[in-house]
Length: 164
Image 1 (cartoon, rainbow, N blue to C red):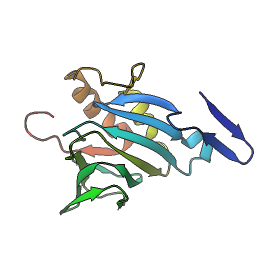
Image 2 (image 1 turned 60 degrees about the vertical axis):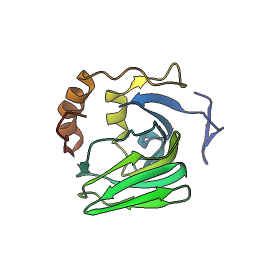
Image 3 (image 1 turned 180 degrees about the vertical axis):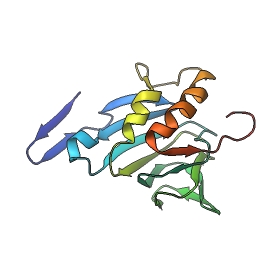
């Protein structure tokens, strides 16, 4: 998987790590729970224009976002704000939140999941990214899969009317 693992940690070159398409966005696993003793997971997420997940609540883990490129609209509880490159967003568990790429091109951020484990949700719902240049076509069955898997991962999803 193009990763160097030793007693002192993990080193990845740019673009390396397992990549999956998740709801139209590219998720690249930088470090997962099995490698951190369950403490945390870090993923690099490339978000397509006008894309983002439905509003949701994690009941088990906190999420921390660090925007690398682009412009995102974030909902954090009742607060809506714009985050650009260099922005840092911490969402404690139990908080309704979402994000959307509102920029003029793809956006990227790092997400840190604490404790680890939720990355397995992405593995279950995602599709292997054989071609990293464009997402697979939208499959309505993915929304049903998301709603079916949500309870297993202590995720509460608020699906907007229209299903997506």
